[in-house]
Image (cartoon, rainbow, N blue to C red; front, top):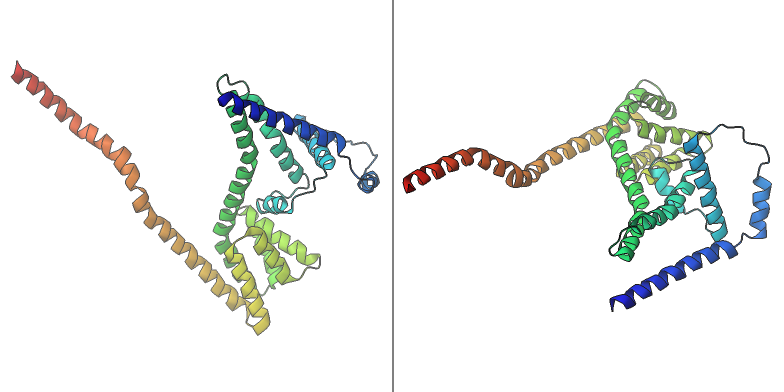
Length: 301
């Protein structure tokens, strides 16, 4: 039974490899796409001096673009949105992520092929793990960036309230706050500067803030957009609305800190029971047990 399963797995692997190679060899770009590539291609020599790491990145980018063009695969919009949410907004980042998803499984399978026992199992396991690893890394990076932005929002809102009370408009106050937070909170600085650039490009204020809320995925920015909408619709003073919103943000952060402090009482039970208490028992009771054992030996003699 096991040899038959191994033969089926080997046959499927060979079939998939042949299918991938045939797709790369026989799938060609359309004449329209080739014409567009010829139009945008530049014949000027590249005068940049690249180090070894940059040359490796350039080679990986060329390989990823060639594979994607041969297979007719376009850029995934969801992956691009996740990369932007993680703060990776360079034009080469989607190609690098695609190259990582393509090359890491091959590298993992090649490394696992040196295992002498259960080679096929470890090859498939390593390939799957290496294929999932970039996605897990990106998800964790997005979560960490969202936590940092959420942690810096109360400071940003307090500075925004101070600037508006000082007489600045909301747009100028936004620029000032972004400049002040560039060193201490670079993540929210990037987001605020992007909102400013989008407004300068002609995008309405509410749409720019809605894009920020959708990009970060934070409920606090969604509430901020709702607050701006209500102030513009009902004519509420922006300074009072911002002050109330900043107080709410501070209150939520204080409540989350209290909640985390309350959870530590329960979380510390397991280290106490399994690690600290046994060590205390050993330190306190071991000398007494040894002395009792010596006395019992003396009595027995």
